[in-house]
Amino acid sequence: MGKIVKSFAELEKACQAKMRKAMEETITEGWVKATENAEDFYSIDSPNRIYDRTGKYGDAPDADPVTGNGNELRSRIYMNPSNHGYRTGTFSAQEVWQAAEDHTAGVIGKAGRWAQTKKDVKDIAKKEFGKEFGH
Image (tube, rainbow, N blue to C red; front, side, top):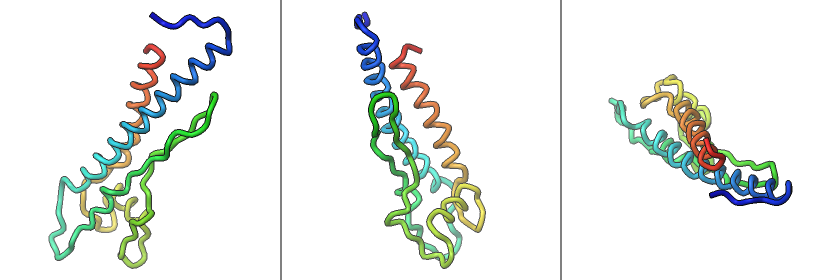
């Protein structure tokens, strides 16, 4: 049975707590999916020339903790370029990751991993907010 609230302030506080819980679960589960999807990049194709994969794409997913209070919370899941420099000449980490996503510039691996992550995080958010708010 649910909690009985006696004022709008109590209702608002209860909703805010549920929202924070849903956000924190979404970020935690979303980061796990982002990491799985990034590691899945390596599940197909291997370079057929002498090349040692760095595995940096699989290590790059990161997430910020949930911040904010009240009715506004923030967080993000992203590919963190810190400590993921590539020695490719002119490509930055972000450009390498975009080429990996699009399967361009000779980058070998399973394309579309970030698009899959965005879909997965959206699905996780729907599930977690639904659990907290009864849908």
